[in-house]
Length: 479
Ligand code: NDP
Image (cartoon, rainbow, N blue to C red; front, side):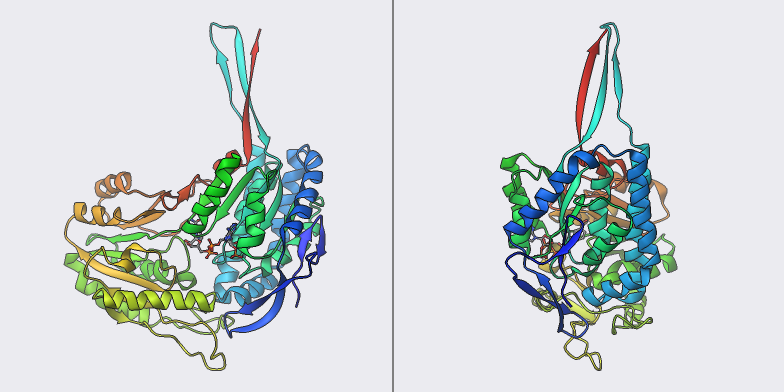
């Protein structure tokens, strides 16, 4: 099957007719081709977006809202088709794609379809000077959206929906590793009546197609989610061109467990926050710190539960963990297990590849729990982004806070405790953008989302995203 670019409302081949293989992580086989788009394809997409902008930016909010909500409804109607495509392309369990990825992609369009009708700007009366200021929030023009492979349609639409809701036109690139649902999205946009050129999807490598979007002198803003190194590179390219930048990058998130937590709830959620989506979520709590008084009990119970997780073919409904996204990624994750051993880590469970019968070349790995000796070891400092977590005990709040804040990253943290004062005190002091207390990954799309330190710059979500995708212009009138 050949995936095509979606430009100006039409599916088209890359102009140089170059293609890349698309692999299925569940069996390691090539199952299609995707465009290896060049700078020229990006230019055509940019021109389509530029042509569409004058009209789209003047479309009433009601019309924009109606179209976005229609896209959302069509995604819901087609949930099975999209979930199957996502699962096949990414290796994630079909149950997860059906319950999280595709419903969330639909919610992204519905949410921003509604949010744009509530988005308001400010006015300031200059008292005593006979003047009033009002602020316009104008769309930027043509913007670029670049997303990663772990939550393909979920993160792709998390950028596109606010961008077009705010009146911009978009040139977007999904990860070349997981292009399928972005490809299908074009059909839905046409059916929902999105005018041609408002959204343009160009497939290809990050280093060529992605780079061409970032380098384009007239693409005025870049919203990027991906690895920290790529984010730093994009910032270096975009900053001298004075582009607006939103960077959602890596994480190395602490999961801090105190003795006074609701134990069963904590245990169940910690299995999920460790291994959901094969641990390939930037928010996964990959560093588990447990108060020493319950450490041994936690260790026994946690490992027992993790051993029950079923690693299997993503299309089977009872699979808890599917395949990792690609062979190089599997190799990277396995390398970290070896590094942990060299740093005196003890593998409490997992650590090996899983051979799934009939799919021997798939990229399966056991959920892995490593007991570490020191917070400074590499597996506790660097992002692994796979089904690997570390555990270690702590004695005091100060000690665990210091360890939690000791990494370069600062995306999210989870706290398990029923001591309200402590959770509020620690929430203030944790160097992260998101804190969950007695829960994990509970999302309200109105809230600001993003990280500090090497986890990124800027916030997505709610009106923050609409602010990013608009320019504020103040008008001062003297009367
Ligand atoms: P990458 O940084 O490798 O890629 C992300 C996207 O950027 C892909 O579409 C990629 O294309 C593209 N890209 C790569 N190089 C360039 C370039 N020079 N110019 C423009 N675009 C480029 O990340 P992964 O896809 O490997 O995703 C995993 C990372 O994403 C992890 O570090 C994870 O923590 C982070 N992430 C962060 C989240 C957050 O909200 N903070 C959420 C989810 C993931 P291609 O893949 O085709 O090469």
